[in-house]
Structure formats: C-alpha cells, structure tokens
Image 1 (tube, rainbow, N blue to C red):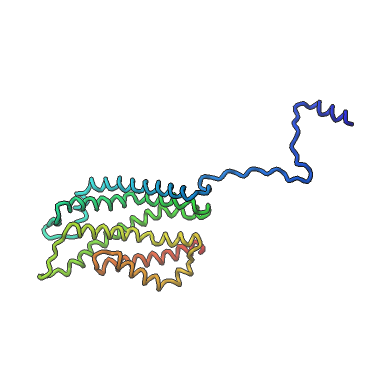
Image 2: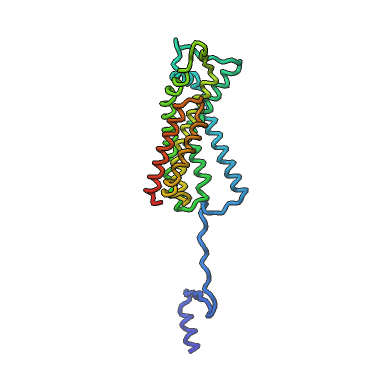
Length: 271
C-alpha cells in the first residue's frame, strides 16, 4: 500500500499539497480588509494638522473673495447706499483720513465671506465627516448644498428688510435731531445685518442634523416651543444692529418659521 501511494504521488508531479489545519488546531485567520482613509483612526496631532489645513483653505478663499470685493468697491458702495435714500443723492461722510480705505476693506471682507461660504461649508464638512458613521455621512451629505442655499436666502431677506429698518430709524429725525450719516456707521450696520440674517438661516439645518444623530426629536422640539420663542426673541434683539423694531421682528419671525419647518423635517425623517 505504501508503494502504491508513492507511485500515485509520483504520477502527479504538478500537484501541490493543500494546507490543512492539524486536528485540534484552529484554522488560519483571514486577514481583515484594510481600512479606508475615512475609517482610519486619527491621532490628536492628525486632527490638529487637518484642522490647520482646513482653516488655511478657508482663509485663502476669504482673501480671494475679498480681493474681488475690493476691486468692485466703488460699485458696491453705490449699490448698498441706495436703501438709505438720501436727499439730493448726498454722499456719505467719513471723519478720519484712513476711514474710507478701511470701509472698503470691511466691505471687501464681508463680500469675501459671502463668496467663500460654499467652500467654507464644504471644508467644515470634510473636517467633521470622518468622525461620523457611514450612515450619518449618507444622511448629512445632502444638507451641505442646502446650507449654501439657505445662506443666500438669508442675504436676500436682509436686503429686503434693510430699507424698512433704515426708514424706521431715520423717521425719528426732527428739527432738533438732524441725521448726518457717516459711511462707517452705515456700512457697519449693513454688513452686520447681512451676516446675521445669512448665518441665522442655518438654524433649521443644525436642528435637523442634530436629530439625525439622535440628539433631538420632533416631540422634544414641540415641547420646547415656549423656551425657544423666548430665546429667539432675545437673540434677534441682540444680534440685529441699530436698535430698531423692524429688523428683530422680521428676524425673529423668520427664525420661528424655520423652527416650525425644522419640526416638520425632523418628523418626516422618522424622529
């Protein structure tokens, strides 16, 4: 029998012996698939390096957008001055030698932030997304372009509200109180309003994303209406410049409508 086995093995020179586990020993383990770049565990130094890179990209985008805003500075000043409706098309005043230059810089910076906002939101997403699960990334990804759209809607609402807010504030002018508009105060008012309305429009997206990760629910949002309304009123009064009643009223009303929209979206998402 031994000779027959040897002959059979010799008749098949190309046959290779198969590896089998010895009786009583576990089978060899199959190597685990390599982790994808998004699934690799990052150290604290890696996180800080990644944060620094994202911040550098954001700053570069804002600088590039600000250069565009500075180039079109005169046209921008003429456009933003229209809601003021000065008599006889009077120019705005500046009081210090370098004030006009810094007004152009401030307006350019605001324009740079507005232009760079899509890239800013994208960089924030790229920094945050590795810390999410694949399911959370799949759910949250479509909301990034929506956030850009909402920011643009906020800017449009601010531009619509601006004439009403200015007319309300200037209406208190009298023979004893003469309004003498300065460029720095006016454009500071306009820039603050634009950024306040634009960033406030991200309010529902934050709530929806918090619901997607299980922090908020529709029932919890409904039960918190009274506290939220009070918080919205305080926030709108603080963040809007000028101290008029029109701007915080419209901003607060928009925020409350967005809050109700958030409840509908969270409920539609099954939370």
